[in-house]
Length: 131
Image (cartoon, rainbow, N blue to C red):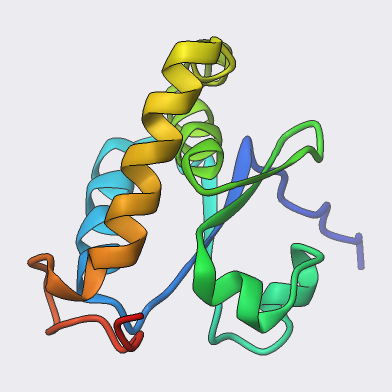
């Protein structure tokens, strides 16, 4: 019987399935990923944080992504890596690397991450306790 080749993705994205806001954002990502380019893994899945080389605490703190090159991104960078994967272009990652843009996106991401339990989302509020 022939061996099935492993599926390769343009990106892999680690998310929190207990967070309503995260799930709402993941729904948007899936809707625009018409070619199934991004693999999504819930941090609650066995071995998922380890697959990304992060601790469970780090996984709860922010989103993580690998791009097709195997580079690891976190926070706003992870969002850009997933978006790059979905779109099939590295343009979002190139734009993110612009110093002023990077600062702005990182600042916005930190605010959202710190307040995600207050933000609307499908499936209720975030399970992460407010800091």
